[in-house]
Length: 180
Image (cartoon, rainbow, N blue to C red; front, top):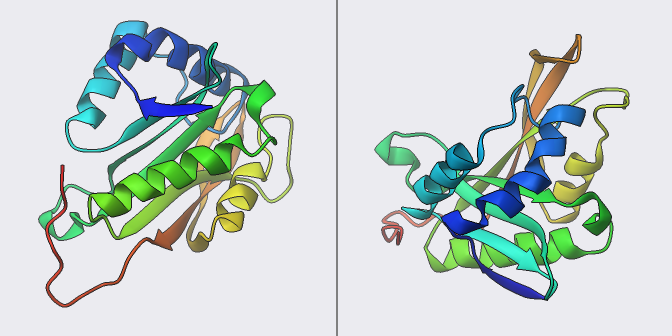
């Protein structure tokens, strides 16, 4: 296994992982799969200020995780929103934990203090959405901190969205600036 920084040239492989989440699940509320060029632009934009990591098994990319801005205001500079996607055949094998741990380590190195995950949620699992993501985040020490009812509409039904958070460091009175 190898973890490395993503590059815009990874767009095709990462999009192949992401596209089924768009077309076949409510994990993302995106309706249309982005183009490869758009996905490459997204990678470039994130890399300007945040980590974007891929996990490889020596032959191919198994998944990716990245952080992005939580909110644009200056007071939120120490907070990020985290995201992870794995190939279906890589799920349930510990790779998500490896990748997210590496992401959190890099976030700590850059002095980010709060990590937030925005997660599609439903009371009863259906064919488009399970509770795997909340369980995964809880196992990594995230706790639920917000719930928005029926805020996402996909596949002819309404889905909730939860926020989960994890503190990555102490909250000093005069925090060091984040490193980009």
